[in-house]
Length: 521
Ligand code: NAD
Image: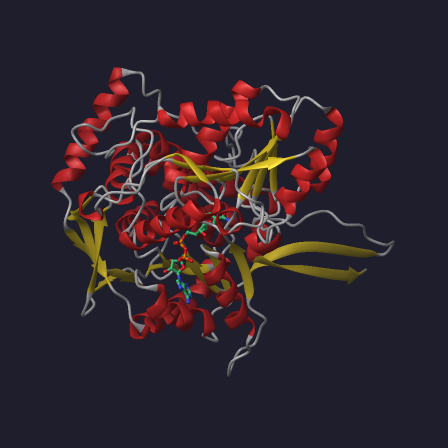
């Protein structure tokens, strides 16, 4: 196929009045479409359910963004059966044809970009630039995995011995379940589903119950791009109601999951139990939480370090698995960096990204939901016992939107709860280290291992961290969020996941079975 070389999708320049105008236009058009109902999609048919899930705008929880069907085990069974039946023909569809469908989905997303951004803003409470980066990432996944399939379609070279031909190639696995979180509702759902689909598998796609409308739009785009009926099935529902069923069923060949550590470990455990009629060991691809640290040593460019800590800690209100939630500062620069971080974080603009006062300059929106608001508020209370609150105040009434102000706790002990557990909100714990060794030890002393950063001009420190920092993605002298597809393959160590690097060269083979076929002549 004659494709242009892969390139990451460009971000909007929000200083350009035309981009702002387009965004306002999309918010207004999508605003008119709020409140609609979206049924399940199974085998290309719209399937109504007895109950629905209402998706709310976290900036204004009285506003219903839309309603989706609420799957039960009955619909989960239908979806799995349909995906299983559809596998035969889809797995035999030429890899080039599958790749073209992903490229077409990327084209549709580009054309509908501002509309997608607007849905993200309403449903996810995302600041515009965060929504933009996320939709760009979804497009990148489609473009990248399409090219990856073309690279791998004939297998990879191995050696043959004289008189024989040895071939090593991949084939699809079967029907899989895609289970997505709410924090990157377009990118992660699209990325996980497109990798599975382009590799020749069929899927049951379950979005998060907090962002199912974005999930419905992604499903529509896959349909419009030409994914055949039954190959992609859209199954919104509560994890607690259909999750165990989907994971445990004998027809499920693999589970591709992104979400919390707790859910990931449960899926891993359930998937490992063989059930009646099960003919394989289920494959689990799991990307889980993080408690990501940035180390600032005494040789660092402190101003840039402070700017990147703030960006990494408060982008999307800290609701990124890659967010900096621990700043580990060398004692000699502790006060200076802390002051700079506090001043920069104080200057962030908090607001409703879709509201009249909102706009491209809103940096911090709401957290996603009432349970998340309560969880983060709980950690803010715990923090009062474990550190000195140098920025932030108690969150207001959630009825007015789930807003939590950027919060900083200083003087936190490395073993404190707020320094060990994933909060997933705009709360930063600042920890003092006596030297670089101490800083690295503190950073690594955590069950997670997703992202990490070091700010330093000391080559020896950087080289040590290159090998010893326990994180799947380690960044030097820059921020630690916003991994680019194909450029910064993304995935964690420890209890952050199965180290399946999304957007990297090893990702697609996780969705396929490798075959060795040898012929003697
Ligand atoms: P979550 O674990 O609560 O939910 C994730 C998905 O799992 C949802 O679709 C949910 O319905 C489903 N689910 C819940 N219980 C289930 C069960 N028993 N069986 C099957 N599915 C079930 O996570 P969340 O709150 O949606 O997302 C936030 C979490 O995701 C954070 O921990 C964050 O760090 C993590 N995350 C990780 C990455 C990464 O790449 N490592 C990326 C984004 C988010």
